[in-house]
Image (cartoon, rainbow over all chains, first blue to last red; front, side):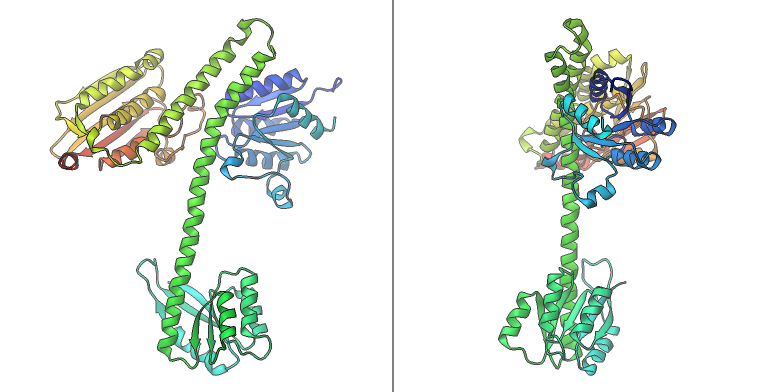
Length: 131
Length: 381
């Protein structure tokens, strides 16, 4: 971690969440590219390759996060993607990445519920970056 | 014309060709069906052949003889049940012992057609079966759609309610842990943002309450004569702090109109939502024009802004619950996505209609037309 700064692309349409995540990740020593929409995220990764990406699920459309992870993986299959959302179990939606079938259509490496502590996020990123 | 596939499994060629011949020209119609049903008949002489055709062709209706050369009819039936295929099965059999009948029934056979049967008997059975199959599929479809709507509502609701909580919690933790230093000054924007998110959440909760309230029947005791001119100026007063902030000017054009017999809360909802939207989605320095007029038959209200406007697609989804239009122009405007769906519901309670005309970057006009006659009916209730 000390010799290389890893770049995290964060896309979230909630400006407060975006600010907080970016703030924490910078504190943890990451370079952060923070964008507020699916469209901006696509622009960013069409020009540069991040080391890891953190996408909100619902932005311009309800499945922006899925679309972004699909598009990012097509460009850079080796870049890990974390999907974060506030939509949760009480609605009856339970998707994770535990079954073969889910991994097949959700092109993300990790699914996180929003509201995780910054340390947990940092650990999850380190694990995916294998550092 | 919709076509159903009927598979007849019987070792007697005469029965198979008989069924084919009778059903070739037969069609079933039902008052609720969009279209008539016709039939395509497939034939199998043995249970084994039947199973092969079932797997390959997925018939809708299965006519099954029990006494077959190889495996028995009830075994074919058991196969269909185990695979959970959506097939309606009727047994055609010359003599059925009670236990075969019970087993067949338990495995889901819904009808017994005794052999030999007349064309009329076969047609009557097929008609019953077709209707049943149709209703089953419609019920299933409605259940799935109902679940989908419920799911969408809940997921958006949970998203919209939890997002501000997460944001506020995040800021509070930053303060708790003094992450930005010990000076209160460093946290000013975090506090501002938290208060704004709380305000947004309060609005959402109020909207949700309105949303559930208007689903109920009109409460006759709340009906009274209300002055639309007054309602319009109340809405302007309510929104004026925000309007001053954005330098928005109001123009009101209210012609001498009779009073309307209604629940004042309802018209507060209509005016407040339309007027506050007109400010919210306006450009700084813009204008909001409120007009109220009437002719012999209708009251007409319209609220016009000089704001960001919408394209046709966006206009189309505007009145659905939780449909917030998300684009660069609306990103920093908070809203529950419920306001206009509530307005529409209220307007419809008064047998009225609401319309929107909009030009991107020029502005939008929302018009509400409420018939006078039905309003007077309400008075008589």
